[in-house]
Image 1: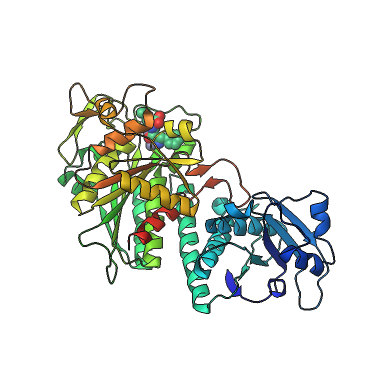
Image 2: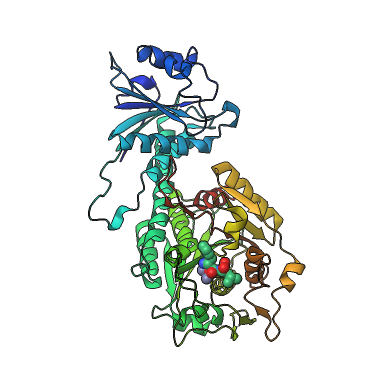
Length: 500
Ligand code: BES
Ligand code: ZN
Ligand code: ZN
């Protein structure tokens, strides 16, 4: 892939095609559209006259024209971005992605983009454009030996008025780091579970550590047993695949954050969730290969952090296990003890995510974490509540929850808070142990997962992201293939960079 930026005339960028963001209600008799109408020999105005294109978000119109003079392009793509006042800088990534996918289908190899955002600086605009270019071309065809998508857009020319070359360079590097890390996470989620075992997850984490300079460690089952992680190990006990607690550490060269502060990102990495003895129905069980996406998200975010080099330390912890039924597997009614000493009555072995996160968040705090954000495809209930539009967020510290929601808004990712509190915590009290791993049937399913994890957080500020609905998209979008979305990575990067 090649990225360039120009500050001069967009139409003379020297690419095969031009793509331009168009606001709703914009007239072809004014400004840039008028210029483009002239360049195309009057082909822009009729598109508007015929109501073929209005500038709604995601709308596209392709105009073919005869190149003349310094203009080498022969196609102009209009991409709607909605009302000018509602056009946020982060939307450049979907504009860039929509244009990329549209032109790729038509076998075009390169284009120049005029995104027209109100980004505060060129770094931001170029970053979003490059990230959208990279993430939009992601496909699910790794294991296909035929019918592979062979088309690719190779060159993006971003047009930014008055940009400094250094800013452009930085924007490209940042966009690349973020886009490629999102695709890395999406690749992990797509991997079949016979290939992506907990051990393989640890191998991939080691590979990104070697590539980027993160510190890597993977605790084996013996070590976890020594640390008393009876909750996590109760999930992996039924599997032939040994569990791994993967740790990736980022330490900045010069730290500017508050002294003693450490952010931990903790992810659920269930490489396959059969439900265990509380076996899931066969239909749709295949989807449970993406039950490691919380862990994959932590890995992708840590990779991007290592490349972006913020000035605050971050630790990533991934609890990687497989949940299988077996002669040795945990049974509903088993009681286990977690590493913080609490006893848990396992009433449903399919509520396994919270069991592994319990020991993982406790471990994060033992490592010195003062803020913990955990992420998990934890409950089917969050899909019922919020669909694939918003990630469910809950936490013990309103300021941290608010900060994450605000970061999400800045990058275009939606979060919706659900409440916690003693009334909910009471619902997981067990008759025979300290707590049980499920609440009453049909009641506050997503919150039950969160209040369970909360029992393993001591003094740290903590937020829990239930990404079961948002981590996967069932249908192809203009700017994105169907399948794993790479959700939350951009929000978390924003959170990290804002705490510098
Ligand atoms: N991995 C599932 C949650 C899930 C369901 C994610 C559907 C994505 C799509 C989780 O381990 C689970 O099975 N949760 C149970 C909890 C219940 C037993 C309390 C659920 O949501 O049904
Ligand atoms: Zn489950
Ligand atoms: Zn699960």
